[in-house]
Length: 398
Image 1 (cartoon, helix red, strand yellow):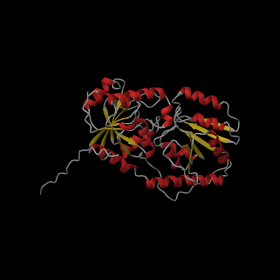
Image 2 (cartoon, rainbow, N blue to C red):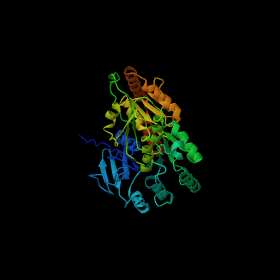
Image 3 (cartoon, rainbow, N blue to C red):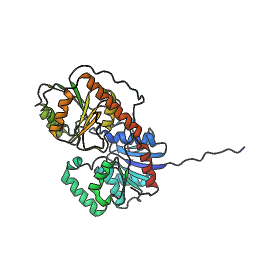
Image 4 (cartoon, rainbow, N blue to C red):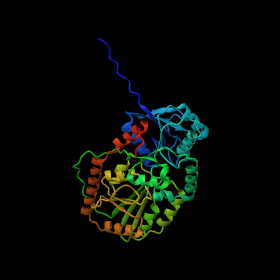
């Protein structure tokens, strides 16, 4: 009897550059985006991730890692780069020594983990391979206003030299696709819409929401403290609220100067606003933290997706978010979007402060129904797989 040998499947290799990766969590969405891609598609593609050897806002190195070498982390191989690697010479060496089929860049403006690899290829120091670039919300109108002149001059330069010619672009939604077109124009010929892959704890479509316990409206802000996340805007909204509110702020103080501005507003808040300031929350804690609050407020200047929005809804906590994300309002207020107009936010918060316990419990139920419907309609896994296959096959169709 002849032995039948199974044909070995050679997986295509995707070399992914991202500023921060596991076990980090302080940088927010990008870590969760890439880890979810690896978890869901790691059996079909070989992911090789180049990232920092520490978490965002930290100088302390991760424990139990190999610096400047490959090691297995889950379904991916990860290269935790030190300062020896994160420079032009080091990135050139890394690209020349690494075999891959697709270069996957998860930022547009990040110098070390996006611009440097592209420069190496543009200067023809490394043979060109298909490249996918995901701006991850950096092209939203609000985000573009931050350091506007610096970004404007960089965009003028790279459009002249052709650094981004013939690349493949990933947008997480039609919303972000429009942002890419608005910024890059005809240079962005090949744009694929591949929504962010999410992990969900939702399994029971008959989940019962417990009746809310009496007390003041409990609001939460959970995100990085930076101009883009726009916490100061909401603090100024609270200056105009006379109802009793408990407001808890979670997140790393990424921008200390901006945090000082927030503290100046906090000092002016009336006594009816009870403020608690907490540190950042690990991915494992987020679900339980959101469950303790009535409404997540997120006046962001722009998100390509917003994992934290998904996580709030998953915990049955309604969301009030700016209209600078792809998320759409639910008329029953499981999720509500608003333009960044202080008076409009004031009116909504006043309305919520008058809800009784039964109404706030109903709002939680609507938040759960919202995310349950999202889960059913979500086709992100299929779209991300199609993105990589299309790029590998040179099918550059929008």
